[in-house]
Image 1 (cartoon, one colour):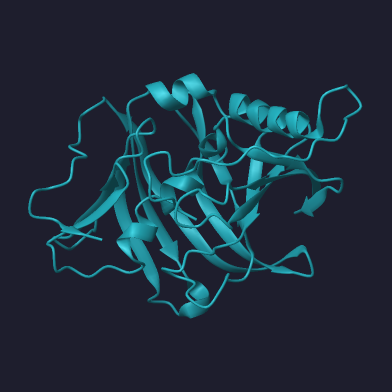
Image 2 (cartoon, rainbow, N blue to C red):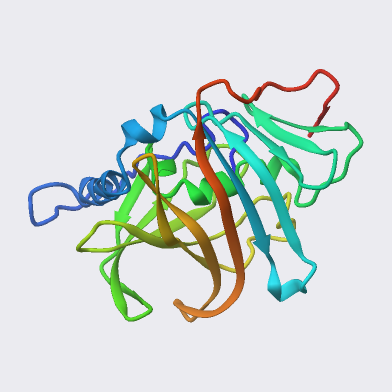
Length: 263
């Protein structure tokens, strides 16, 4: 899911174009829906120009047991995707800068692999903004999908085969047809770092309890659901998102420490 280059979420232009009712291609219509969602969440100008984004992402993998928790405080530059994680209660830091993943101390252990995890939480909290890429492939699906009693428009996003570590990942966004807010996404994970035997099961992640952070609407929690027969099934995991705030640019040093181990 997470790319290994600075523009790690680069996506491919869709080659198939059919005509929508407005005269736009279906691809253009789908892209416009995602751009409308970005505007509904506060707009790309605020997303890119509000400074560093800092938050704590505590991921409870309840299906693997009560102690299966991934927890870190992270600071990200949305423009460059440079990121630093600090692990609460441990003298461990890791991150990514210019496509290079690192960890400090160099022999420290962290799971999932830092290269995979460095931008994973940011990717989810940053929906729909992380799909703002001129090379994205968007497809509006014909059917809506119901979640908690409401029908949502579906837009599928796919990747260029040459893009990063996991070019076969896909995401399908659920966009509220009235407010244009994104409610969640179901997605695949194909990175060999965490799925060495092939793609893992498709899961749905909700964007819950949107919070206004300096004019940008971001989720303050997530729930993860199984997908069954193409529909959203039972809940299997949840995430607490806390301490979400913007810091002035360059508040936190996001460069790679000289003694870090490279991942």
